[in-house]
Every structure is written in structure tokens, then in C-alpha cells.
Image 1: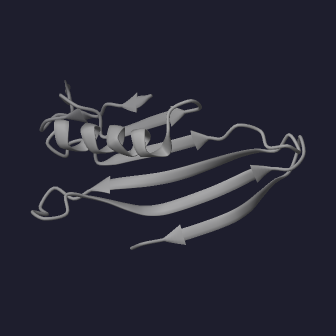
Image 2 (image 1 turned 120 degrees about the vertical axis):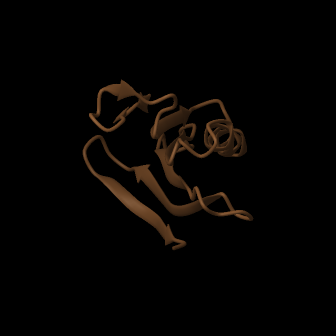
Image 3 (image 1 turned 180 degrees about the horizontal axis):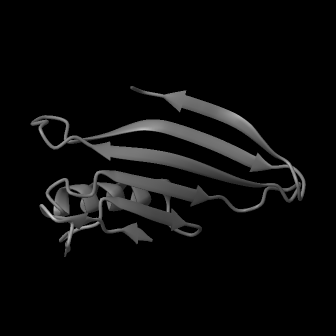
Length: 108
């Protein structure tokens, strides 16, 4: 899923690339999703500013399903580090109603 903004002085042109991208994966590895984020950001010359990655994990032996949300942000003016992962949240579904936050890491 992507969000493509309107640009230009009158906000009447559609941008060439999306500025926000959501990538999710069940069978795709977390490393493959991270490569996808990098490809979106570098392939768009950093026009894709935010890439949200959602990695779903197979149920464990207790039938609990976990997901990891990672946010990658591009920095258009950066030369050495054009993208940065700065938030990672991991949830585990323990019942049909209440997800529990397990990990929250901020790398600002």
C-alpha cells in the first residue's frame, strides 16, 4: 500500500513516487522486508520518505501470533546514511482481544 501526494505550486500534480509505503510479509523474512524498504527509498531517490514494515510470524506452539512493526525513514540530505530504522515495535497476540507490547526500541 502506498500514499502518493499531490505536488507543485498548486498541489495539482501527482508525485512520481509515493512518500509513504507499507510493506508486509508473512512468508518473507524480516531481512527481505528491510531490503524492500531500502529499495523503495533508494530507488525513488529518497522520495519514499517513510516505509512501514510489518512482519508477521507463524503461530508458536501455544498458537500465539507475533508481528513486528519497523519504521524506516529516509533523509534526503544525508550522504552516508540515507535511511534509518528508528522504531521497532513487537506485539504478540495472546488472546483474540488484547495484544501485549513486548518490545519498543527507539533509535532517534
